[in-house]
Length: 280
Image 1 (tube, helix red, strand yellow):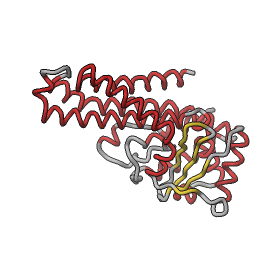
Image 2: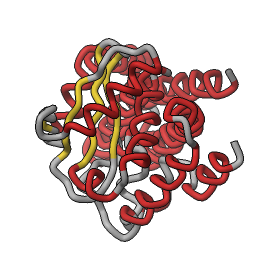
Image 3: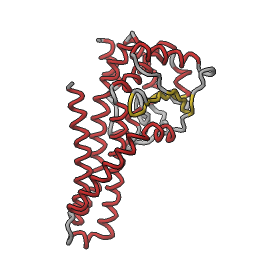
Image 4: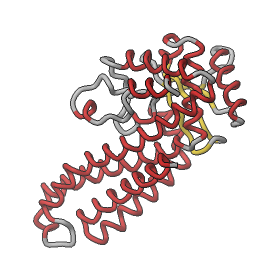
């Protein structure tokens, strides 16, 4: 319950930040435009989130004949959770990772990288699939996609605010917006604030999915072992992933990156996740 309340407040914060940027950029009219952008983008994310995310990562439908044990694992766990069978996809990347997407349990997909199938044993894979199915059951897939959509919109508007300050600052300072100083402040602070809020949403949902996924798969140690292997494989190796969509993965695919990507964690520390699993 606490995690759900926290997630709601953070999502509210993202929406408020988007509207605030609009107000600084163009006053009341900017607020209205920003609100419309938020509504439209969330509508698009609701109906097309799974297709967009899978397309970004070039995920391909997994053949049951080619990946029999993957299919069997998903079938067993969805039956145990009393959930519809999701679509299964393979991401053509060798660094091991996985994510779930979709607006609801009846419109969901689970995607795993090619590398995860050769890195984890069957019980560890079962723990990972249990984690991802828990995201689906808890509607985290929709929440995280909406958060990524809003964060992307905020960063886009912040970029526009920067250009507006550079090329149209004088006129905007006499209008209803926040002037040059306000626009520059938004351009610098807004993306950082969006990343921090998105990080908070992701961390809250990961702990919950770890707990529920371990319960579903039947052995917390399997998921703990999988997280240790995945963390090790992703440290020092940068997966081809974007900052706005990285929170949907079971471990941070940008953990091997430098600069801003390494300063804003989208996931709880793996050590703490493992500790909680082993003590559950």
